[in-house]
Each structure stands twice: as structure tokens, then as C-alpha cells.
Amino acid sequence: MFHTIIVILLVGLLAGIVGSVLGLGGGIIVTPVLTLGFGLDIKYAIGASIIAVIATSSGATIAYVRDELLNLRVAMFLEIATTIGAIVGAVLVGIVHPGFLYVLFGLLLVFSGWNMYRKLRAGNEVLHQAEPDRMAQTLRLNSSYYDKALKQKIDYQVENIPAGFTIMLGAGLASGLLGIGSGAFKVAAMDTFMKMPLKPSSATSNLMMGVTAAASATVYFFNGSIKPEIAAPLAIGVLVGATLGSRLMQHLKPRWIRIIFIPIIVYTGLQMLLKGFGVNI
Amino acid sequence: MVQVEKSIGVILQIGVVISATIIIIGLVIGLVTGDTGYPGQTFPTHLGPILTGVAQAKPVAIMMLGLFCLILTPVLRVVVSIYAFAKEHDHLYVIITSTVLVILAFAMILGYLDI
Image (cartoon, rainbow over the protein chains, first blue to last red):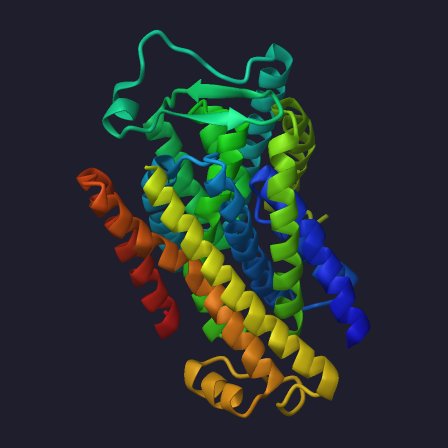
């Protein structure tokens, strides 16, 4: 018992650090470790992973709020899309063939990975348009953040709001239907489609994930998928990890976060594509 | 805007500290007694039995209460944002955030009824 708790605490710590830096839920680490490493039933692994998502979100957001890294309006506006998507996804379980969705989402992630690679090669983090997007102005989504690594205040504009909103519907749909945190989609929607810089994208994704996950977490909580002996130490580990990770992220250069992010997003995309064609890796 | 973000930060901090404290108490009692308080692999999943277990200081029930508080933290965050936007007279975002809360409440009710 004691040994297991220590190992799970460490898994949580790692998941919290990675999740808070990249704006992901950490399910990418938690689910395989628990199923492959501990032989835990996938049902309990997903339950534990949703707890990790919420812990990462709350833990990281405390730091990101203080440092004004997140874009609250973007988060609130897009949460409409993710929560609706999540409900529709939960209702559609068993109606839509998941293989089709896995292929669709896999392609989207691979596309985002390629796009991020292009952004990395081009070397410009922030887009400046002469004409600001009218919808972004109405919704007052344009903002700025202070980059501690670059030591300067960065103003940015938000674009393509309908496209971002649509992808967020998809992200919500995926989390409801496939039981995933879908942080990779959220970051992709903001970074690739809405042209936000990576740091506010990641911080905002962290904030949004907690709300989307809270909806599905109640389902898992009441149907007994959240196993306390696993989820409790995991939550503590993740909270500590997310607190550390959110401090670390601000001192990383955006370029380095991108370099870590690209292989993860491409790997997740390829894994989903293969799953869609019936291959499990 | 700064005010809205500050109140969100405070709420999240309170939520996280409370849930973490409860979870850690449950873990420590579990480790000291070496017992979950329930037969075999079972654990309570509904609020009534969880609270009864907490009153009897059963470690697993305490952990479940802490996890439930953790799940509620983001929901509370949305509620506080509505209030904070209203205080800043940002009507558009009061409507947007309230919409999110309604959808979220709807999803939680669906979840509770297990539909």
C-alpha cells in the first residue's frame, strides 16, 4: 500500500509538471502508466485521469492568474463550445462509430503538429495584422501578457473565432465521447487557428480543461469509476507538480515549449489515427 | 479585469487547499490504520454514504469527500466569475459566463441521473 502510494504520487508529480507547462490534461501520462504499469482497469484509469485533469487545471491556474498569463475572455467564450460539445459527445456514445472520430481527430492533430513546426521554422510567435479582427474586437478578446523568459510585454490579436469555436466544439465532443482531456485540441485551436501565442494558449487551455472535465468527472464520480486509493494520491502529486510546472513554464522560451509540444501532438495524432483503423499501440 | 482574475485566483486557491487537506487527512489515516474502512475493494460513491463514512472517520470516505471538493472547484470558479464580471458591469461576459454555468449544471444533472 505505502509503496503504491509513493509511486502514484510521483506519477502525479510528473503528469502535473508536463500538463501545466503544455496545457494538456496529463492523461497522456496517467492513463498508460496506470493501465500498462499497474494493470488497472481502463475504467478506473480514465476516472483517475479526469481527476488529474482537474488538479492540473486548478493548480496551474492559480499561478497563471497571478501572472496574468491567461486570457479569461477567450476561455469563457470558448467554454460554451467545449461544454456543449462534451454533452453532445456523452449522449452520442454508442451512436457514432468511434473509429471515424479517431481518424478525424488524429488528422487534425497531425495537421496542427505540422503547422506548429512551420511556426517554429518561421520563428515569429506573434501575428500582427493591420486590420484587427472585428469579432475579436466586439468580444474584446485581444490581450497581452508579460513573457518572463523574453523579458517583455507581448500584445497579441486573436483571429478566426468561428474556426476556433468549431474546433472547441470538436474538442468537447472528443472529451465526452472518448473520455480524453483533449488539451491538445484546445491548444491547437487557439495557437494554430486563432493565432494566439503559445504561452497564453497553454495557460488558457489549462483553465478551460477544469470546467470541461468537471462535467464528466461528476458522471465518473457517481458511477464509481473514481477509485479513491488511486485518485487520492494522484491528485496530491498532480497538485504539487502543476504548481511547480506553472512556475517553470514562465521561464521557458516559447520556442522550447513548442519543441517539446510538437512530438507529443504528432504522437497523439498518429496514435488516434491508428486506433481509428483498429490498431492499438 | 484584474479584479475578476484576482477573485478567480483566490477561489481556486481556497478550493485546492481545502480539497488537498481533506485528501491528505484521508491518506494519512489510511496509512496509519492500514484499513480502508470498507469491506474488500468497495467504496462509497454517493454523498449520503460518503458523509456517514466521514463521520466515522473512515479513510476512503474522507478521500472521496476531498476528491468531490476538487471536482467542484472549477464549477465554483465559474460562479465567482459571473459575480466578478457583473461587478465590473461587463454585461456581455455576464451572459456568456452564465451560459457556461447553465450548460455545466445541465451536464452535471445528466451525470447525476446517469443518463
